Structures are given as C-alpha cells and as structure tokens.
Image 1: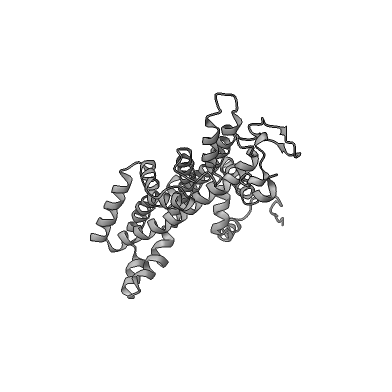
Image 2: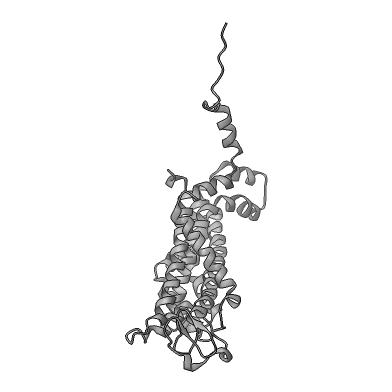
Length: 312
C-alpha cells in the first residue's frame, strides 16, 4: 500500500488565497493600486519634497529674501554660482534687488502652496455643502443652486478672478477669496451628481423612515459616499489654484510685492529675459511647472484608483 504526499512547493490551497484577500484592508488595497503607477509615485515623492522644502525654508535658505537688512543691491543680477561679498554662494543667481533666487523660490512656494491648498479646502467646503443641499432637497433648492453653478461656469475663471481682485485689491487673503468664488462650482456639480445617485439608495430611505435629522443624513450618510470623486477633484483644483495665483501675480493683481510668490518672481525677471538674465524667471518657472505636474500626476492616479470604471 503506497501513500502519496503533496509536493512542498505545490500550489497553495484555494482557501488560503481567499483568506489573504479577506485580510487585505481597503487601505492596503488602495496603496497597492496607487503604487502601480511609477509616475504617480514619483509625483507624490516630488510634491512631498517640495512641501517640506517650503515648510522648512527659513532653516534651509541662506537668507530671507524679503528682509531688507540681508540684501545688498550690489549683488543684483548675479549669475548662478556667484559668491557675494558676505560669503554667500548664490546657486541659482540673484534678481535685480540682490535677492537669492534659491531662497526666493522656496519662500515663494510657501505662499503658492498656502494659497492653492487653502482656496481648494474652502471651496470644497462651500461647494460640497451646496451640492449636498441641491441633491437632498431637490426641486427649488436644486434649481437655484444649479443655475448659480451654470452662471459661474459660463465665465472664464481667470476673468472672474481678475474682476474680483480689481475691486478688492492685492493681498493673499483676497486672492484666496477670489479663488474660492471661482472654484466652488466644480465641487458643487460633482458632489450633486454623486449624491443624486446615493439619494435613491435604500439606506437613505431607511434613515428617513427613522426620522433622522436631515443634517445627519447629509453629512453622515451621503457625504462619505461622495468622498472618492471629491478627493480627485480637490487634488486637481489645488494645482489649478496654484496656476491661477501665479497668473494673477504675474499680471500684477495677485499678492503684493512684499510677499513672495512664484508668479511674482517670474514677473520680476520677465523684463530681463532678452538681456541674457534668464535665471530670474527661468528657475521660478521650472519650480512652478514641477509643482503643478507632480500634483496632476497624483490626481490622475487617484482618479483611476477611486473610480471603479477606470480600473483594469
């Protein structure tokens, strides 16, 4: 009588694979799907490095480019790699005021990221609330809110922002306020479309039968199911807000000259481009481009991961 034994390297039982899938948490599954794109990982790493460099700019940069006591007009428009009389090495050169371009870029990133993230968050709160109200109550509420959204989206964003800043004037908070008024409609339309589908689900009908308050139904039941598209559009709107802020500052209606901004740095060096002083505008432009591209790469992968229709 002979007995047979399974090979030690044979295929694993089907039950173990099923157990492994059950043990896989949604977060781990999300991370594994996000990591499938090398470009998205690269974009995330680059953006994290940029954000850390902006946060720790006072400890990284050799000078505060907006402290007049640390500036020397004699160091104006020095090419990259020059050494000042005080012993500073200007890796990226200086602008017409003698400010270190490397320091100016990192300080400029602080304002650009603050404006982009801040305006996107405030716009998300306003747009999400209005979108949920339109989907939950419908009828006149939906009609009024959606007509406001259509009116907002019918005008170019840069034109609306320019008109608002022409009235309010320059300032970081004014730029954030203008961008919130420009961006909220995108959130409202996206959330309203998702919430309209969820509004017909059985769990919403059950919550209404239990006479739960409408605020609890909206924010504890509808809102969590609207988060995937909301996260995607928020990521894209951060990049869009940074680009709009740079455009407004370049046109002279964004942040004042006393505040650093990548758009303002590009505008300061634009007049010297033809004279060969390319670095004054070139390096801030590269920093702006890399920041926006890295955010967009992350947003594109989030869209693919969070949207089941786009998954392979």
